[in-house]
Amino acid sequence: MEVFSGGGTGKDVATDLGLTDSVHLDLLTGWDALKDDTPVQSDFVFSHPPYWDIIDYATQRGAYDPDDLSNAMPYADFIKELDIINEKIYDSLVKGGRHAFLVGDVRKKGHYYSIIKDMTWYGDLECHLIKEQFNTVSGRKSYGGTFVPIAHEHLLVFKKGEIWQVNIKYTKDFTRTMADMPHATWRDLIYSIVRGRGVTKLADLYDALAKTAKAQGNPNWQAKARQVVQDERYFERVTRGVYQVA
Ligand SMILES: C[S@@+](CC[C@H](N)C(=O)[O-])C[C@H]1O[C@@H](n2cnc3c(N)ncnc32)[C@H](O)[C@@H]1O
Image (cartoon, rainbow, N blue to C red; front, top):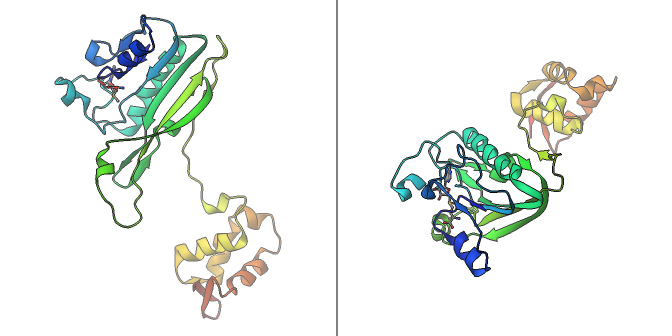
């Protein structure tokens, strides 16, 4: 079974492989991955979704569809919809079946989006192949400076090892402050405080440091702070008891 079959490459590949019972599904063939049931149970699914809204398939199809994954939508909504479809695909596999999933990364307004990292993984990852991406708009441009264009796609193969148990993996975004970082050195912590505040009095540095997990575990933390701000590789004494970063 192929989901997001688009222009028919998958059908051609199936024919070349001598497969006569393959099923190819797309809005183009009247099948909606969000609303419609998977029509068959299979041992192999290939899916190649839109890379968020990078290519507008409504224009290619000549018709708008509210369930098109390439519609302009917030990234989090795109990932939610992709997760629904990936779960449906996984649920439809027979025991021992595989889902091969092809997608690229997206760079937009200076932000890098890793779709494979942000989506939920259903089943056990069997392999992760990197495919060179040909004929991209970014590949035809020449860039100055240190910009690295995206020139690859990811092919992940998930296997259904268990028929009832479902193994799921997902990542989570959250924010901490340096005060909570358990492995920061005294230099890292003090540099972060002084860099953040600019010209800093020792008393203010003590106030900020007192709240850190590291200071709470060391009775000599004030002496340690005085020792660190005297390291001229990183800090500069402005006047007595006042420092900035070097
Ligand atoms: C990356 S393209 C697939 C290209 C295909 N592998 C090929 O060789 O032509 C993504 C496809 O997803 C389809 N699509 C987007 N949202 C869909 C949905 N909700 N249900 C079914 N197909 C959808 C688009 O119509 C488009 O053809």
